[in-house]
Image 1 (cartoon, rainbow, N blue to C red):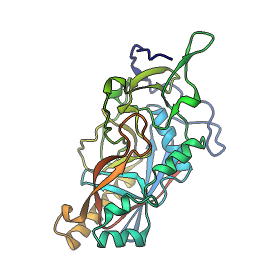
Image 2: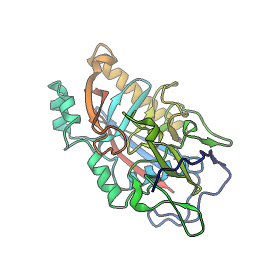
Image 3: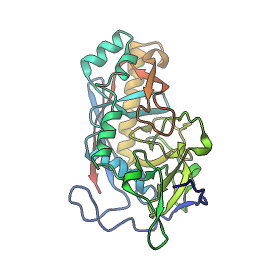
Image 4: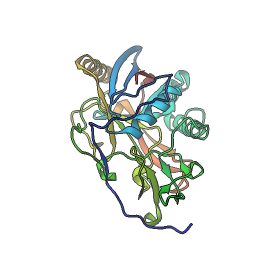
Amino acid sequence: MSFKRLKRAVLGVAIAAAVGASAAFAGCTIETNHPRAQITVEFNGTEYVMEYTLYRNMYPQTVRHFIELAEAGFYDNTIIHDYSTTDWYGGGYTYDEPAYTDAAQGDALDDYLNDSDYYKEDDYISLFQSGALTPSVYTDYSYNEDGEMTVSEEDAYHTLIGEFSNNDHNIEEGQRSAEFGSLKMFYTEKVIEDIAEAHVFVKTGGGQILEHDYAYNSATSLFSIQVGNSTSVNATNYACFGYLSGDDDITVLEDLTEAIADYIDDEYNSDSDFVSPVTAVVDRFENIAEPASSVEYDVPKAAIVIRSVEIIGY
């Protein structure tokens, strides 16, 4: 099929609209606008349990993707692999305590993150290929017998549609900004040689098929937790799909950040001493952007571990 430029459209989401009448998860029969997740983070031998409210009514594809990964146990026993005082990034690397400790003590965390035993890109691809993850990004499109645009599962790409305003996904009313504790589905910057040809076809939560730039539709499993009051990872460029459910959960995250700050004060001179700068290879399975790109991470020398992500309400 020859490449055909389609008129770009705005992805609008009305928060009053019902999301759906059936669920594919855990035998549930009704999908609510606000599923709930419980995230357990461990640091220095103490667990911190936080409940999150997910905004499916605003970010349906992103929330479904996160739930599917959580239900598959993908996030369990993973690490915060990139640390700052404003945002923590996770969802890409398994935690092995002895190996991680040895790597941190030996200044070899770059070896850890580039070891196939610990990076989870191949696990993610296996999940996608097994059908456990619902596609939303496609390499091509066609028309059905009624003249309507459609996409085929055989043309599905393994990444996630970007549900944020810079990708023309606009919330009509009620959108929250990035704030302390926010969950954001994250994508690494892509190295793309021919930007003019780097287009994909996305399937919106409302079933529309639209052409969009690939770079904004390239998230997989990575997400960030905002731990500062401000951030460069704002809601215009990343789907800000989850928020701490209540004051008690805010307090738990505050306790965790304070525990890390106290640990740094006791063991290190500064935040910069607490982390190891690491160059990691990512995007090994790319077929649109440059494969096997390198990124820079600040990896904590004392592991911040995501022990579990559980969906506790649908």
